Length: 73
Image (cartoon, rainbow, N blue to C red; front, side, top):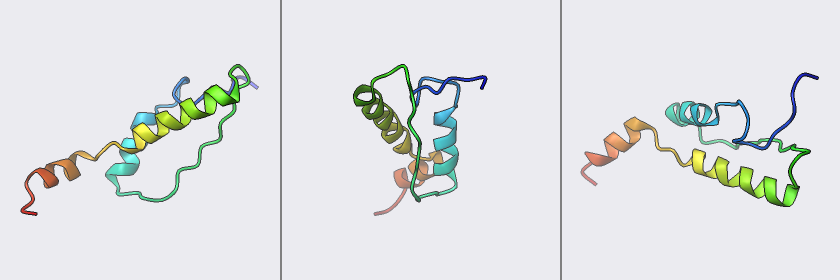
């Protein structure tokens, strides 16, 4: 194969763009990401990858933030 598996957030996948797109369309389903990184201990790498995904999943779509700023609630 022509690639090495690396921990989430440490490779070429544009994770932030992916999560922004999912949030922009209102996706609220599960996120499943396989973690494989032979160069990193799983006890360090998996929690680090999870923290990155949780941070990205919390991105609020611009329209939602705008609407919330002007809501009457």
